[in-house]
Image (cartoon, rainbow, N blue to C red; front, side, top):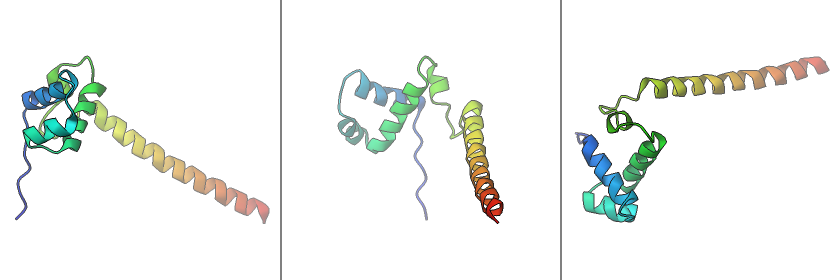
Length: 100
């Protein structure tokens, strides 16, 4: 049976990032002391830096639900990529038929 995913409180994440940023301690050392993976701590740091100026509640929304704006950006990026692929295909098809 798969292990249950651990969940961390907003305060835990903020304190872990604070140890790295303000105390200037290595990410690997802090992660080892807290019993988490270093890449997880780096992701929390990027998430907090990416939402600079926001409150802690907005920086770590919780329960695995991304904020609505992030979801919209992700959806639009997928759509842009799909449209680019279609455009490239149509360019190639038009060039092929123009030769004949």
